[in-house]
Length: 184
Picture 1: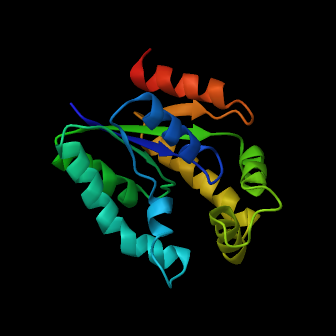
Picture 2: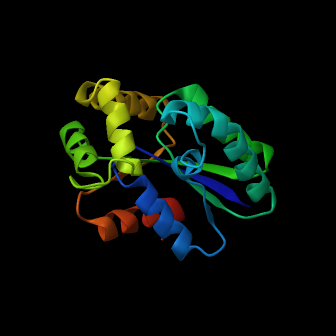
Picture 3: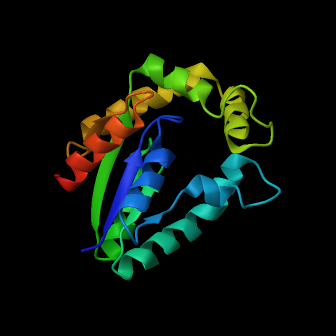
């Protein structure tokens, strides 16, 4: 049975990095990074691009799952109804839905977000654009609220696989993810 593996977590925690590695080490898996897709939408801000691309991403995920192949989805989802949209897409495709949450402490998560992309990142790069958007919407207060909302979502979804994302230990974090999700 195909499965949709959601890698949820705060911004900059390593979701996209883990998804890329997962896809590279699991042949045939689609890494559907919606941030990459929304970067292809021109002429609008990040939030508008996300709204425009989401239906296409859901359709792509559903079609890929229906073909019998797995999808890994690195995505920050703090609202239950948004998470359930992706869970429904998996169910419609006859696939399993595996929900994971990559987490660190609130303080460490915020620090990791600010290190993302490095201090000399091109102002037009994806990390710089995300940092500007976060700053415009509340900065560290927004990031702290995001962390708290993820913890509340975790409490409401006990089947979620919780993965401690250790800064600087990509290999160790990945091994824990594989062991918890694949049981190996």
